[in-house]
Length: 389
Image (cartoon, rainbow, N blue to C red):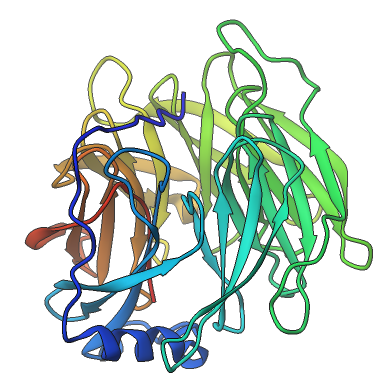
């Protein structure tokens, strides 16, 4: 149900432009870029951008895409590729801002670490097996010592240690989602996301195939996961990704299969997630494959990417995070918005379109939460993850 569509249309590779040197320098100078920017502070003119793709499909990329974007106009300029990385379909930056981590979404799943350097001589530090198939999501524990990954095809989650230089050590744990069993219409567990809760003590794994969100406690000394609890969604919901409200008391869950959104209460003390009633995505009847939520830094608005409908749904966040009120949907500017991300200052929203091979940029209205498209989409080879820095 993750719709890993293999498009046969050739996509243009990143442009090799004269701006390559500036882009690589910007990407390498991530120590400052990684730190959260002050809300509504004046944006730096040019900032780095990274793109994840599939390298094993027709028209796909050849590694991690490099580029820059203009923080005022949203204009993206391509500048090259970090090669030697297979199917880097999801990206995450380490807390230090100098190491990039990618999944290798293949049958023999792996995760890769890449050292980012200011001189543009980025170096692949190596890959480690995830102990599962088709890893599609990863995140770095806030302490910076552990990498967490989700194996979609095998329905399991894994833990890897991160060394002082950012390189990955051998896997310390892998946990399969065998209980509860899949419900009607599901063919097995499919772990789709793994993130650390806002309390920093619990790790949550969203499993699309089991209609379940698991809460684990991570042993930060041994790198082991211990199950604390799990929250079941209704059969056939297909939960894909969740995003937390800034208060840490609520999370918004995108259900891919039944085309709904769910507000979940979160107990920071116990790590327990309690789903509320499903609500519409604003895309009408049928399945629109909701992908993920984004929540503004002030917690006033939430956005949901809908791949089948090719739209972004805007919600007003009310009752201190406990309620979502549907406002509208706007065209996403491409086909199949697989991944969305805010710029660090929250002024821009980027939408990566898997099927049309394009990235669209929107300006975000800080007061009303409205989205205004900026310029023409940027052509890229099967972009499935966008990481503006």
